[in-house]
Amino acid sequence: MKRYTLITGASTGIGRHLAVDFAASGDNLVLVARSGGKLEELAVELRSRHGVEVLVCQQDLGRPDAPSKVLDFCAGAGLEIDRLVNCAGFSVAGDFANMPEGELYQMAMVNMVSLAAMTRLFLPGMVSRRRGAVVNIASLAAFQGVPGMAYYSGTKAFVVRLTEGLTSELRGTGVRIFAVCPGFIDTDGFYDRAGHDRSRIVTPISSPSVVVRAVRRGLDSGEIAVMPTLFDRLMVFTQRLMPRRLVVMLAGFFAGAEEKKRS
Ligand SMILES: NC(=O)c1ccc[n+]([C@@H]2O[C@H](COP(=O)([O-])OP(=O)(O)OC[C@H]3O[C@@H](n4cnc5c(N)ncnc54)[C@H](OP(=O)(O)O)[C@@H]3O)[C@@H](O)[C@H]2O)c1
Image (tube, rainbow, N blue to C red; front, side):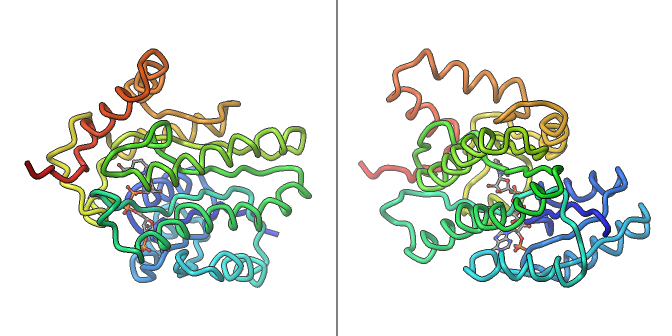
């Protein structure tokens, strides 16, 4: 059986950068997202440039049956998934009271339920082979509620807590799991989808390459939650020294996603 790395959310942004990096290291890939055309284009490029096998599995992870369809796709093609990178996700900027109900369920499905289901479905194979890794792309937003991104920060806190618990369950199995927690990253799709005005973000916006390096670091270390930059680590560390209300207020100020208050 051939061994593969499966990346969700590989059509754009961070997931696409991770796909390029893994292919450059010789990994065969399964790419998952809704935009089949973009995935096919990327697959053609990676096969010709790096000589790796790349399969495309077009799925909407907002649908409850999508994770089992991805598993069936891999089993049908006779693939062993050695690494699962759960990267698909999105945010919606603005006040929670105005958030469309549909977005509430879609974000829960994509950011939490599908991520958990993919992990649940692909872990048993890794555990039985006694090797593998699950990489969950969370966010710095996981460490405090972020005004203007309150629900999103809640979904990412779920990702970090799920990952933390599983690190202990997986001890001694040969399978590694960790979360990567980036601050703001320069991917247009994320802000467009969220309706988030990037010019209001006060903290630095890093290149996706910092997330790629953080994933590599996570694969080579025992860290549970990997912060890509020194700034990210400082943000998480210094909040331990501050009153919680101040942490939340600062997070809202830095993110600039809250709706402007009417006087
Ligand atoms: N950019 C940031 O500042 C930042 C910071 C911290 C964490 N993150 C996290 O990093 C991850 C990637 O974000 P990004 O910045 O790279 O955003 P992006 O460029 O918008 O990419 C999001 C990816 O998720 C996929 N996706 C979204 N909804 C999906 C669905 N229903 N089914 C299947 N795939 C879906 C998209 O593919 P399709 O549209 O083709 O389906 C796309 O490939 C997300 O989990 C995000 O929360 C981002």
